[in-house]
Structure formats: structure tokens, C-alpha cells
Length: 247
Ligand code: SF4
Ligand code: SF4
Picture 1 (tube, rainbow, N blue to C red):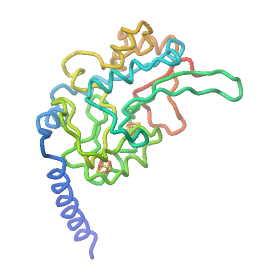
Picture 2: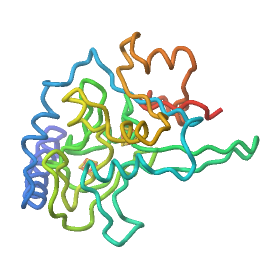
Picture 3: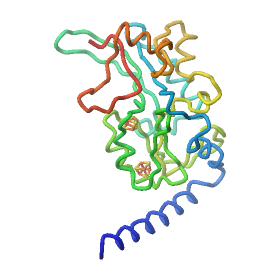
């Protein structure tokens, strides 16, 4: 088969598979509005790059306010199988063996500028908006899980169970992959992500959210003054999520 014919056959296969996956994921789930918004240019401009700074010196061990807020915001509930439950954000307690320095920190999709999940996705379901937010288009995700294998941060979850009573702003479906959306539905309304809000309300203020491209923003000023670590910076993914206090 010539390269051209092979490409055509592959596109046809992927188109068919994507259509089947969309149908499988569709019952009771109205994906179209949210995806159109995410795929569109409304609300997403390359003049903005949304990012987060996690100040681990302010993050309390044992506090999971951000995790609970994320689950509530997106209608994520336990299936009774904790090992495969969706986790868009998780709390990690880590310790540097060399110094003994311990940290408690939230880990979620790092919204990479060069996202491996997007590179490997055969259907284009994994995509990055102009403002840097990385999302999954559930209509055309075929559940191959290549993105889960490619993500260095184990940020993505596969949905094994049928889901019911989903929230209109957080479409989800069995057989598809999902991860932190940086609360894109809130961001497009000028609000902050649910985890940031919950951390603030819990009295810690460990999460700063804002436009990395705006030198006047709190996040840009904090990063300029205090610096920020990109986890696995050696991978050169230029994540939108940075950490303070790790070193
Ligand atoms: S952290 Fe993982 S899922 Fe998120 S953009 Fe990077 S590679 Fe993709
Ligand atoms: S599982 Fe991941 S790589 Fe596969 S189609 Fe869905 S988003 Fe793309």
C-alpha cells in the first residue's frame, strides 16, 4: 500500500472508530456544547497562558480540600474501586532522601506547552487550546490510552464504568480518558479553578492561578521574584503548573 493510500485508510479507520466511540459515549451525555466551546477560539487566546503556582510551603499535609473541591465541581464520585477511580488531582506526600525535606503537594495535569499526550493521540482528541489548557474531546476519544502511557505525570484517568447524572459543564463517558481541565468552564467565565478557591477558603492560599504572559499578574510576579520549579524539567515540556518550595 502506498503511503498516500495508507494514510487514507488510516484516516477512514480512525474516523469510523471515532464515530463508534462517540456513539458509545453519547447516551445521556450532551458533549457538543462544551466541546465546541473548548475547540473554538471563543474564550481562548494565545495572548494568555493560564498557569498555576503551587506554593508547597503553604500546602498542609493531610489537607485534601483541593481534591474534594475538584471531585465536587466535576461530579467525580467513587465507583468502589479506588485503584481505578478517576483522579484529576491527587495529594502527594514526598520526601527528599538526600535532605530529608518533606513536602505535601497536589499533582494534576501540568498543562504542558509541549504535551506528549497530544503528540501520541491518534484521533486528535487530546488537544491544547490557544491559552495553554490541555483537554480531551470525548467525542473522538477512542479510549486507546496512548496518552495515559505518554503522560509523565500519571495525570489521566480511564473511565471503566457507565456514568450517570453528569454535570453539563463536565461531560464524561465510559471508555474515554479524562484529566484536569483547569476548570476551563470557570476560567471562560472569568472565575478561578475550584481547587484554588477551596485552598483559599481553607485558609492556606497555596495555589496561585493566573496569566503567565501578563507581567502584572500575581503568578508572573511571584514566579519572577521567588522562582518556580517545573517537575521533571529535564523533559522540556514547559508545563503551565509550577511549584515553589520543592528545592
Ligand atoms: S501533564 Fe500529562 S496529560 Fe497533562 S498536558 Fe502534560 S502530558 Fe498531557
Ligand atoms: S485515549 Fe488518549 S490518546 Fe487515545 S484517543 Fe483518547 S485522548 Fe487520544
